[in-house]
Length: 257
Ligand SMILES: NC(=O)c1ccc[n+]([C@@H]2O[C@H](COP(=O)([O-])OP(=O)(O)OC[C@H]3O[C@@H](n4cnc5c(N)ncnc54)[C@H](OP(=O)(O)O)[C@@H]3O)[C@@H](O)[C@H]2O)c1
Image (cartoon, rainbow, N blue to C red):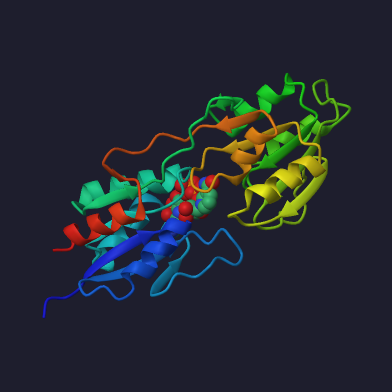
């Protein structure tokens, strides 16, 4: 019997988890899920799992060769630009088929009050000149530092803004947060809960990355006429892109023959 094809599934997303479940008992594919190891208690995909960075393009290339990887399915988050670029470069050099699964971005509906921002840093700079006072910050814990000075009364543009900061894991010891409240939580959230949260805290601006997927906070902001600073996605590396778990499974099936 021919050996199963080894598929490296770069995960850390709900889509990565769903793909691992779908591929667990595949007759022709052995799926190895890879997680960066960023979140403290990630939901562990079924099947073989490895955790931690590879060590750049060189480390990933070595891993692909050593582990006899036949296919790479990149299901990392749309903002995980470095991992996506490394996977593209390593696979291209080694001639390994690779595709990027990227969920469709959110698009504004009529009446939505979005201002597009090219980066998290740009959003923090823009905010200096924005009148909002009570800001809902839904970013990763590594991304909040540029907002800290905006809450300080003693800074020229601080104006003492108040922040409701939401992240998945608590920040590391010693990390300074913007003044306000911290809540921990992992989506998906329900639109009615998001609406209640924003009302309870009298939020007048939402800052979010355009992650796509379940859009409860976006729907709640629209309903409450709250403006949004929408951080745009980084560009994707070249190569095949797939926009759903179904399309990714079809790609894996086709590539594994
Ligand atoms: N960025 C976000 O907003 C976001 C949101 C939700 C989930 N995530 C997930 O969290 C992980 C890290 O995201 P990030 O934004 O830090 O990525 P990134 O900036 O593109 O990657 C930074 C480094 O983390 C390592 N890495 C990333 N994803 C990996 C994976 N699946 N398996 C093994 N190593 C991985 C790689 O290290 P080496 O160079 O050492 O190989 C990579 O160079 C990803 O798996 C992503 O799907 C990210």
